[in-house]
Length: 344
Image (cartoon, rainbow, N blue to C red; front, side, top):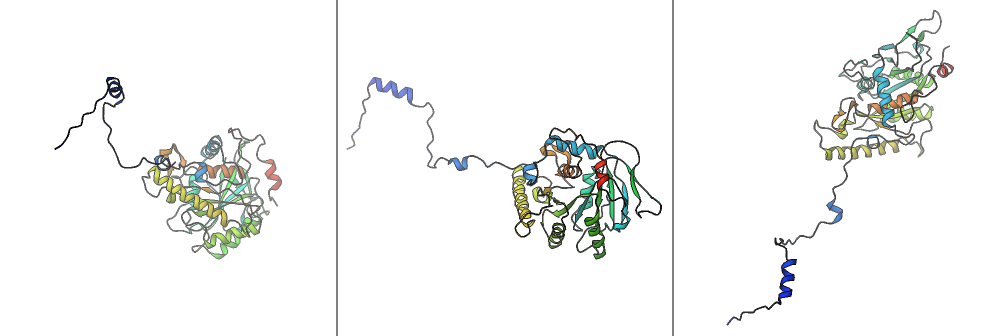
């Protein structure tokens, strides 16, 4: 026989229970509360100077400096071929600083130069679907229009002069034939003459495919530059294939791609050391860029990925940079370069 049990609660305790009991009963769950480690979502990487490039030798450029570099190239007259020749002896005497771009035959050098000039549609540098089509050393003037004047029986290549006056700076960009399977051995001889003997050359930019890293031919070129003490800097091209391989890339996929890029940058940095030591004349900063895609969704539609950083590196190499606030350097361009120029 079941017995009923009655609970007797005093009136004071009953009132206390009424005030403390929730009006909506809680659901019980057997799962443990999430730990603090997994409750917070991981921070996603976004494309910016710290994640796209590796700055070891210099400070990353400020937004004002990147804007300054972009405007320098954008306001320049559309670059035209200043001279083209397969032979170093045909290079004209010049008072202007030069930079050159080297890379394997399929690294996308011409496309990068067109993006660098800010004229990807006009394509001053010829782009071909077939790698290795650049067979001569082609020079372009950025900053103002230049011209090459013949000087009688003197130097075969003549002399570079400005087509109009002005104190604004100018830099000559030289597009070199690609090396690798599609190139020819005799081209390398003339290229090395230029790299080793051209006194106007301020920096050599070596393009590597971001997706594949340093190939054997790249390592050979980089070692030669190091042994000869030729100032150079590495640029990873086609970086979009790593960080945004699809047309629509989610923030998470972008973050994963930037992590892969970080690993690639570390690998290249390590392989740039010979005998475990950094190269004296090499710029330790490695830049990443794309001539095909921009970062409109990240507020960076102004230029293709990383191109403004390459523009800044070019100006810095030639002494045409500005301070962190975007104010141009006080010393005007021209006289110092004349002292270094090979005008014989």
